Every structure is written in C-alpha cells, then in structure tokens.
Amino acid sequence: MKVNELFQSLKQKKPAAIYVILGREEYTARKILQSFVALVPEEQRTVNVGEYDMETTPLTTALEDALSAPFFGERRVVLIKRPYFLTGENKKRKIEQHPEALLSYLDHPEPTSVVVFWAPYPKLDERKKVTKRLLKKAVVVDNDFLNERSTRAYLKQQVTTAGYTIEKEAFELLLKKTENQLSLIMNELPKLFLVAQATKKITGVMVERMVAQTLEQNIFDLSALVLDKKVQQAVVMYHNLLEQHEEPLKLNAILVGQVRLLLQVSILQQNGYAQGNIASVLKTHPYRVKLALQKCRRFGRAELRNAYLGLIQLEEKMKSTQQNPQQLFELFMLGYFTREKTTG
Image (cartoon, rainbow, N blue to C red; front, top):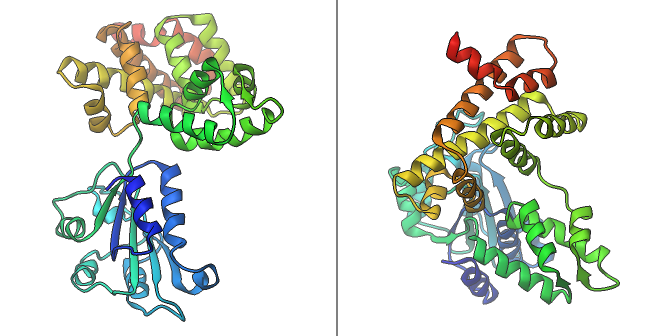
C-alpha cells in the first residue's frame, strides 16, 4: 500500500488490525503515526494509545497492551517502534527480544486493537519465520525515500498550497542543501515562509541565508575539492569546519564514507546497475547516488582508490600522533600519505 492510500483508508475510520510501516522517510512516518493516533478521541489517548520502542522495551509488554480491551472507548492503538528483530541486523542491544511471542498474536489479533509496526529500515529479513508471517498478516505500507521526481512534485505542491511561489534558483538550491531529503526540506519550509511572508515569494538569497547545509553536504563539497586536488580551497574549508567545533576524526570518517560511496557506485555502475538499483544495494538515499554518479564520470577508479587509501592513512595518523589535524590534512592533500604507503 502507498502512503496516500493509507491516509485515505484511515480517514474512513475502519483500520485493519495490523500494519507494518516499512521505510526510512521520517517526515511521512511522523504524519502516518499521527494519523493512527487520531483514530482515538483526544480525551482517550492517554489510556488507549501506547508507544513502545523495541530498542528499550520488551515486545511482550507491547503485546500485552494490544491484548487489553480499550478503556472506556472503542479502540486501542499500539505503536511498536524500531522492531529491529525483524531485520537481519546482528547488533547487540540491551533488551533481548523474544519475537516468537508475536506469532501467537498474529494468529489471534485483538479485534479492538490496531497494532502498528514502524520499521524505519529499507527492508526486513523475510527468511525469519516471524517476519514472513507478519508480512502475510499485516497491511504493509511502503514508506521509503521518495525519488527525486516525487520529492520535487511534493515540494511544489506544499509551496503552492501555502500561497507562495519559489524562484527556480531557490528551488534547486533548497534541494541541494537538504540533499533532496523530504524530512529536511519540510523542516526548512516554515522558516522560508516566515521570511517571505511580505512578498509570498521565496528567493535564492533567502534560501542561501536561511537554510544551512548539512554536515554531510559540506563534506560532499569537501570531497569534490579533495578529488579535484584543489589544495588551498580544501584546506580552507577543512579549517572552517574545525572552527565550527567539528571533531577531526568525525570529519575524516564522513569523508572516508563519501569516497567509499564513489568507489562503490563506480563499481556497481560498471557492472550494469542502474541508479535505483545502486541505491537499494547500498541502502542509501537515491539523491546521494545521483550526485555520486555525476562525480564518478570525472574521476578514474585509481584516483578514487588513492584518495580512499590516503584518508585511511590520515585517520591512522590522527589516532597515533598528537600532530595538528589541519597540518595532517594538508599533508594528505599534498599526497604525502599515499606516497608514503606506496614507497614504504
């Protein structure tokens, strides 16, 4: 089921017993959860709406709530968030879950309860018995990242509905600064509406002034300078990020991730993968893959590999010496670490 179809069905106040909201789009996820909460009258929500995070709460506690009759009302809504046990993740957590308890509930769901699994993951592990059974019994809602075309259309609709216009330059800049992520875009729009209240027109200057780039976007720009071997500009940008109290190791880790992404995208593209398939395989936002594909056309595999190895060496130096991080970055930009590894 698509998100819009879900909203339409919930308006009719005849929900299914079990839902799985699958995907990583935070903005629509919040709206979806609000729509489920709205199924219960406001004065009853404190007793008939339960929210349980599986990172910190046992699944059995949530299921016990779901099995309870609503308190002075017609319906109980139980929101089960981050059910990691339905994925293939092996990361250890403080709470050990027993997903087999869910199998019994799936066979005999409480008719007065609506149970919603919010699964902010690209996919679930269908090899697991409990996952397979849940997906068979539940209404599954596709809530993964919108593609670029859909995001553009949604943004235009929101601006028009609010009674505003937006310059083409401003539109493109907003998408770039937010990496085409709907949740980030919708966080920024209220500020732009406020500053453009008098003219009802959002300009490029307003977006430039009001919308800050994410750290990841700044690092993406830095990676372009690194790969273009623009030493002075890269060092200045790195210095500015340090001045903003960003941790050197954190900056390097994101930079390593950016160059690794370019390498992975380059390899997958060479093996015949399309943009959408690459995003799915790498479990990353389609817009990041689009930017990576554009950048890969300018750089050979050897250049990307050398940059990646140099950044790994840079990290090793940062961890093992007390040398100034900016000086180490300057040495990296001059090719020192890669040369050292090659000749060492």
